[in-house]
Length: 429
Ligand SMILES: Cc1ncc(COP(=O)(O)O)c(C=O)c1O
View 1 (cartoon, rainbow, N blue to C red):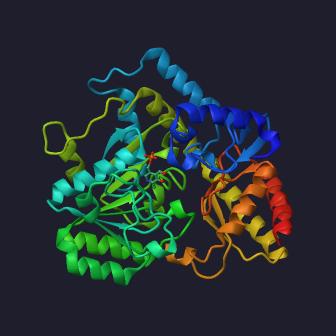
View 2 (cartoon, helix red, strand yellow):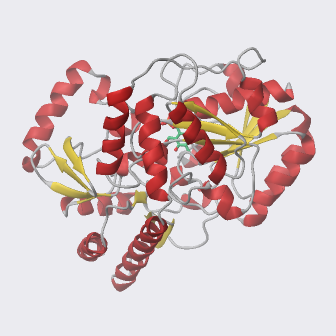
View 3 (cartoon, protein in one colour):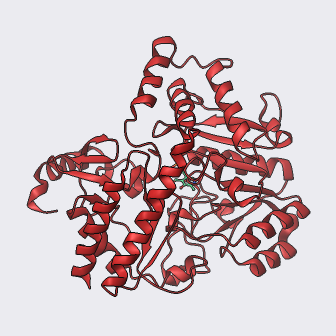
């Protein structure tokens, strides 16, 4: 950290004394480890008073921008009436469930939780319960949360490819053994695995766009094959739309792709930054979670009125026709602008993304799965990101992490970003 970050450094050193590593979530420890003390609209402010255009967006939630006034007002209004009671139903959660059912093709019924990890955990347990099988399939490069069945093979070192790459010690061996990890977009490998072991597989879980490694677009025939073969073998197909849900459209990526999974997990942008997650799916599956039936689903804070009120208002704003138009237009402007300046400086780059997400990889050639991303020049990418941070554009200084545009970002923010990229890439070249 430079001498301009005196206050950030002081706060971080204090944090380390009482919190392991000084952060409450694994991916929050980065270099420079700035401390942010204010967030509003498209901007975040560090402890030393510097403003940044925020593209990190807390890994994705504030799709309308930070501290959206309408959302905050809805939360305040809800709190004048009720907070957490924790028994029976609440009318706000019914309204939100109806909204999700209206928009998300796979949703006949909805359950609310607090985090994406809880939603994917519940989806996998439910899948095992209804199929009576233990194994699951996930794909290299996809992240689905911090529980044992899925905490593996996201951004793996080259020597870990094709092997189990666990992100933590202490994971239960039997659970780990029951997860098969396959390459994304590889139809042949998937079909072979289903042919050999399909009868033992409870669920296939995927990010329909693996955004935890930036942005790798699914081949339409890959998603189609997943749907056909899982249906044929009685396997539960789970789209983990914790990132793609609400960000790319109210119906998630499933609506855009025209492929309907059996279960869908959602989180992040669902409540513009307030904690809320959801599991939705076919009624015949979801009804197993009815109290008294055979799958246990619970949580003290589930469907907390704060998150639910925030989500209802977020959905209302996302339903306005101009919202996604703005998000998609600015996302495209960022992708095209950065690509143009990379070309100008002859920097090898694939400026990819989808909708409001933009990801400049420092490589060329086809990108079908994580294996292809091993060609990415991580060192150059980190230099670029750190250069952009110095310019006042906050792109998380971690390779392959996606950048997010929000409703609060303006065309001027994007143009300023492209001008800064011009300078940073010029210096890199
Ligand atoms: C696709 C996906 N699924 C699940 C999760 C886990 O969500 P949470 O961090 O809210 O537990 C994440 C978090 O980044 C995610 O990106």
